[in-house]
Amino acid sequence: MVLTTEKPEAAPMRAASGPNRVKPSAKKRPKGWWLPFALIAPAIVFELLIHVIPMVVGIWMSFIKLTQFYIANWSAAPFVGLGNYQIAVNFDGAQGQALLSSFLITCGFTVLVVGLSWGLGMAAAVALQKAFRGRAIFRTMFLIPYAVPMYAGIITWKFMFQQNTGVINQILGSLHLIDPNNPPFWLIGNNAFGAMVIVAIWKLWPFAFLMLMAGLQTINEDLYEAASLDGAKPFRQWRNITLPGLGAVNNVLLLVLFLWTFNDFNTPFILFGGGEPPAGDLISFHIYNTSFITLNFGFGAAMSVLLLLFLMLVSAIYLVSINRRSRRA
Amino acid sequence: MRETTGFKTFRIVTLAVLAVFVVLPLYVMVTSAMKPLVDVQGQFTWWPTNFTIQPFIDIWSTIPLASYFVNSVIVSTSASVISVIIAVFASYAVSRYRFRGRTAFTTTILSTQMFPGVLFLLPLYLIFINISQTLGVQLIGSYLGLIITYLTFTLPFAIWMLTGYFDNIPRELDEAAKVDGASAIGTLLRVILPVARPGIVAVLVYSFITAWGEVLFASVLTTQTSRTLAVGLGEYSTQVNVYWNQIMAASVVVSIPVVIGFLLLQRNFVAGLSAGAVK
Image 1 (spheres, rainbow over the protein chains, first blue to last red):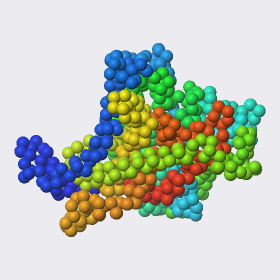
Image 2 (cartoon, rainbow over the protein chains, first blue to last red; image 1 turned 120 degrees about the vertical axis):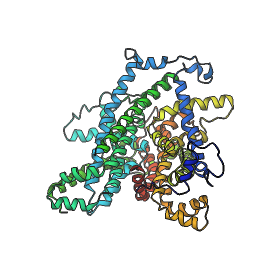
Image 3 (cartoon, each protein chain N blue to C red; image 1 turned 180 degrees about the vertical axis):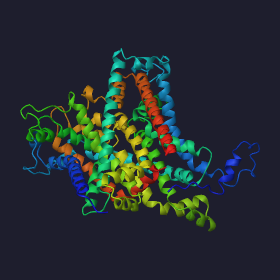
Image 4 (cartoon, each protein chain N blue to C red; image 1 turned 135 degrees about the vertical axis):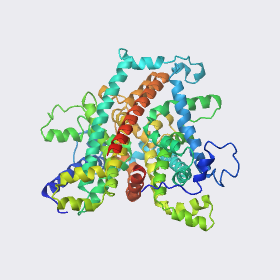
């Protein structure tokens, strides 16, 4: 339910701040016009402090040669203009190549993790849509990975993925899917990508489940009743009632899942620690390592800004296409 | 509606697969925490045959876990309480008033979800270093520095969710309070807040859980004395040994408070999340 009716005393306030505000007299500004501004003032002060200022500083950093010699005295760092950006997008150079490969790995990771997390969340939400004995137990159980602190969950997976002592190779060995005398490594080499995807899904899918479950509660049950009287099978009911009914939730959910996954830092950081395999080099992790190992903060800032621009671009395209679609419908 | 066999099969398969996927790590975590070190260093066993609770005792002496625990509690509590206090006022304004800049404000709050943490980490790190150079105020390794950085994610989320809760509280309550002569602030504090209490508690707990699990900022901005659990757990892996049984025991210990808090409040949480999301 969205309430958008304007409060009576709020309406004239807009007029006061409109074009004819030559005389900001008490007559034009009703009593208490300042109240909402006073209420959001602390939030704005904090927003400036924690988001706006660091971001402006970050953008400025990306234009200077901020290496370890200048960290404690950054005003002395030479201005290099777009120099840091040129290094980042020069895909023939080592740095640019590393960034590009990290970007592509992150894209693949995001598509898999978001797609599968959404799919699992949807399957579980639909499976638990109707009441049956034991529903509450499953619902609670599925939410636990979301509540467990991320590092505790990821570190447990790290234990499970150990080559000789891990449960994963033990299970795969007993299913004869691998050679038990020569078990594969999961945290180094190319398998690291798969391990990272599984861990990320484990901690992300409950959020999709939670949101979709909440969304399902808003769908009118009579619709299903009518559809089943018309002889619609469950899958058709899902496609024609459930999916459209979840439209608003899905729009937000997919965007948030995308942004969180693309920015994921915790999974590779805890799973691989210092010995990061190239296959697990997600972009946030890449920027972090480049910045703190080479101590070239200007270059790190330039890569962060590029990442933000990319995310803004994708989000904008996504939101515009959603608006178009909803207008056509 | 009658359930078809197809749907029943779908339900059984889905729930079984997901239950195994979800429970397997939790099972491994809990059972490995009850094994002696030699057992977790050998081949994995499904059952702790040499059952022991020693890891739960050792975790406190192998590393200064208690002090990391206190650090995490202080930082997470401060960050979530500060965000909720600020968010209560801001969300009330956004929910009840139409003012100039309202859309810009809400858009900014939502768009911070988009920002990669590393984008804030680098500038904040440098700002902190330079503040200590020029003003002598040490923010790296201090609670204050970490709390400020934690607000970057707890505050926008608190505002987002609380606005959803407030929108669901009927305006008739505000009107009635006004008729009784209450001021706007009086209405918020004495009428709206008591009604919104479940929502506020849910936001508080949720912010706490997020701060409790934060790794990125903590890995750079803490020192030995201010280290939080998220970073401290790494210390069970030493050059000599990786104390997997103690790592698992510590994971159980740090998970229990937040899992219980979350499960108690899941209902409130679902309501607020969906209210905030459909706008």
